[in-house]
Image 1 (cartoon, helix red, strand yellow):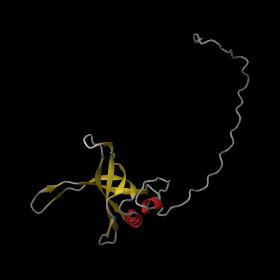
Image 2: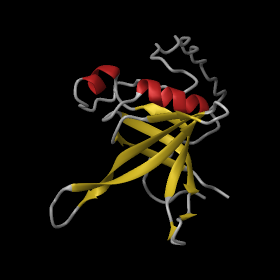
Image 3: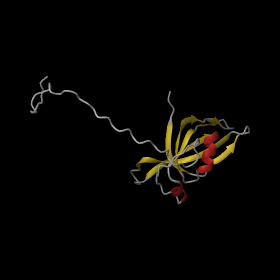
Image 4: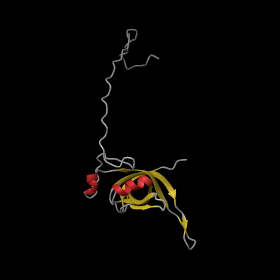
Length: 164
């Protein structure tokens, strides 16, 4: 069975950080995800608004580094949150339980009004700060290939039929 969700969008409001009575951190966010196609009548691209719940270190990370308008990528699973109210009416809802979250824009562009520029910054709750990539070793030089004696092969010059 597979239940995997990957979303990228902007936060509709600041994260709502809470803790359970046992001290476990949780955070709820709502993401506006723009659809890939435009509305035929208006010509504008519409958005879907998706609720996301984060737990533990992910919740702390989101509440510390993201604000309303921030571009965010979320990886997680879809959860069913059905409930019945006091009048016996059944309510249905779905939300995403986040496993990982990532920055999708530079810190400067998110502070300057949300102009989207993906400058390669990415972090998740295990690495909550911007960092330089580790230097990589130079590629190994290629070794020359020895083909051996090619005298027994015949060169075919025509575009005609292949001899096999």
